[in-house]
Length: 234
Image 1 (tube, rainbow, N blue to C red):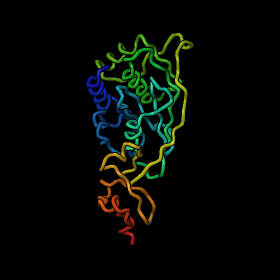
Image 2: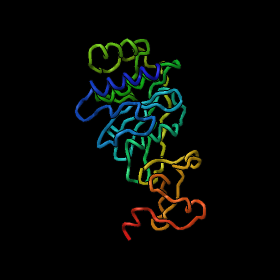
Image 3: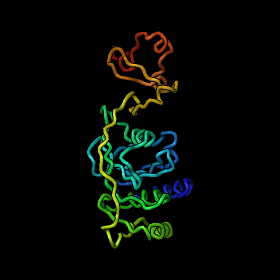
Image 4: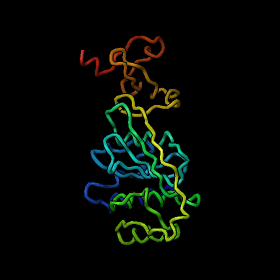
């Protein structure tokens, strides 16, 4: 499914599919700049992985700091882009978050990831577990069109023969968080001026240059430096 088309569909989901406090969190477009609003409770969100692929993520039924990832084309890993978007939504105060890759049905082509992501969210919003759902590949797009026309997101049709469906392996990924922005870090961040990090000499926590307005001298001369929280606490 084309990127612009799925963005429109996600907007439809956000507008039409509020069910109690379980809802689609934000428009997918916000994920490109990590500008999702912070979740104040349970959420479900369709996000782009940065690699021409869409997945669904949700903390419905999870404890604090845990998010489930529903990916119809998973090989046991998560892209940094995916993890950072989840970090933006959670803004978790604890030092780490847990991401559970759920053993969901895998698509049998290279184009149905967006439809599957919506099907996963539909299951979640209707009180079902996508990990145990078996969707009918031949009816995915037809049912999605029906949902759009009728303004109602109902569970997608189940497969008549569930024994032939392939599922990915479940996996638990622990991701460490840093800085006041509570985001994960990767090697590419060290190459960007804004996301270079320095350690506070008092609390020994790591912070981004841009988040704390860390002066150049800290990076050039390895001089002592305190984060704003420790400065105010002094």
